[in-house]
Image (cartoon, rainbow over all chains, first blue to last red; front, side, top):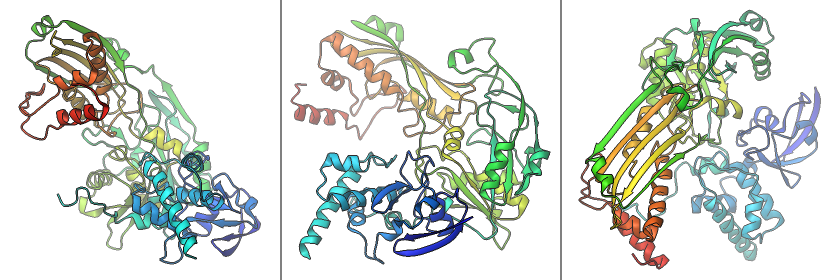
Length: 160
Length: 415
């Protein structure tokens, strides 16, 4: 057993863990944040995407031990109380959500993309969410949702 | 009709965009056990022995359950009860469930499943419809390899082909398809204070599930409650029972909450598939461009178990003409057992495969007629008053001609 400390959604968590524990298990089983989903366990589907030190990772492919000291954002860290993030608002508005299982990962990939490049083109958006599989929507509404989110964020920044 | 053309926010969206929506794997109970099944790795054969006594001794293992410990029915199925919950002796496909292992943590379960050793007497199976229909083929189904055989006839097929200027005859094969919904199967079973056994599961048919769980536990249906969680995609593959009975049996025996969670690999191995179909099509057209005859033979590989095989092949037969008037038809569709993964419901349910054949035939005939394929479809498409191949007279809601007119207008095609 080894001791690790991770900052998840702004809060510090210290746990003694098995060095083989995956980051997704740390998040779901140790911290009990169930919004991060496992779809394949081998980094293909992106359902378990979280943001680690500003970059997206498949949390099924990262050992919790190697995330020691890292700053992690999960879907639970995105909204501020009942106040939704513009990406969440946009996904609701456009009807980008069907079964919902890919959505936490999809939203976090979108956030990482727009944090880095708010003016991403359609091609860049598609590339940005290319690691996240969705079997329901056919992606059209999701890409539209990202575009609406871009406008919402730009508008809110102009308002500041 | 007030809802048409109006945007509504789906009520479940807030949970889904915030990570609060509860799928079965998100549910935990104090003292919960974990259960999983060892599945067959051969497609056809007899189980000779399983090292159950050794498995019982492994760390963390609480129970090892075989078919003799199931209190009620040992098989399930949406129409025919032919899918073993746990196999008695014969396995008919890769992925048949052999024994159910219950442990007190996830890691022990993974380890125990790896340690299971099964001895088989392997039989030679059949893996194509052609092989399954041979006279000396092993019988995979209940007395026959033909699960279902439907014929649809209208007019006079020989006379119909005599009227034809062009005839085209081709074989079309569609592939097996996996649903690959994003949330792998999971179920959590537990007892309520009043002795009702509850199963939390993402399912398409909670009422069917209740019946199946009650049957296998040999209790009345009012002693079973199925609680549908948020469903992470389904597309037909959550119509048949998957983890429901296993979780329920493990709870029945242990009296404790039990979770069954599939890996992606187990999900793909275990549940139904879209029927691969072989479609022989012979279609005739008159010099005026009117379809005059269709002879179709459709064979669906229904795999090792019935599931919805007859319903799917019936739908394939009914939709064999496509949305076109053909006065003389001779259609036959068969669902055929093999040792492949079993086929069942998947979006479209048999109506999805036949357009590969029927629409390809349309394109080929249009070319022979030197007619635009859209025009060819237009002059043959159903309208109010048309008779379908099954003898149904269409009396309302036949929008295809109007739809084609709109396409022609936008694409600037002369009809």
